[in-house]
Image (cartoon, rainbow, N blue to C red):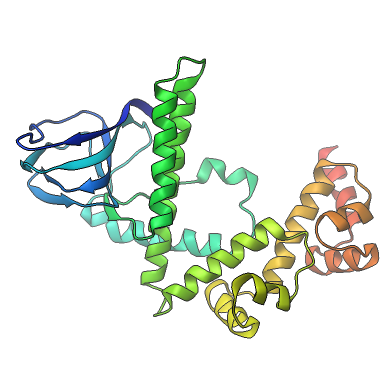
Length: 298
């Protein structure tokens, strides 16, 4: 469900301006670029600095407490499915969030039917540490502003899509930081595992070896494989095989490609070897898998 974006823009406040006391009646997202913003929301003080994101609740009163210079993006929006988690529910929410992130780390592809079950876990107030993540979110909000000012058809829908992307990116950054915090003292290793997963998801059809991975990630393969298994429960090549099998199953289900061509598309030039790997991992040959799909449709 897309947010309904009422206002999105960049602005800068300077002394003596201070945010007036108000209850907005809509969610407000602040993303601080430069300077500081001092707020009070229902009696709780907030000091926002560069790289900080903050979601103000539609039903809570907020006001400025100090005149400062601050450059920031603001997004005023409504989302019918956005719920605020209170303090009593926070630990339960964190556990649900942790289980979902662990599951996502281990699965190469999210099932198509999971759209209806997907949730975006957003922090109310959080600092985005990595500059590359800040730049990405900055660019998404810039695109949203451009669409909001556009005169072309469906520009408000595209604006809402960009804000939804920004919210998902914030949620992903938050998820990664939470996993790093609970990862038992190897946050940098966890980040490297994510990068390896992203690369495998994009390059699964290539000829991938331990030597190739060492070149791509400037590290020892045995070490990378150990930390990869510690985080995901799988070795690098077990994960790569799972990715390839998911894509192979999709091609079997959605195309009329010959088995040998499908094998080449997912990284197995040898048709016989592809069929062998497929049967070992899926439980049946590619042809049998295609027949089972036909029977289910009829």
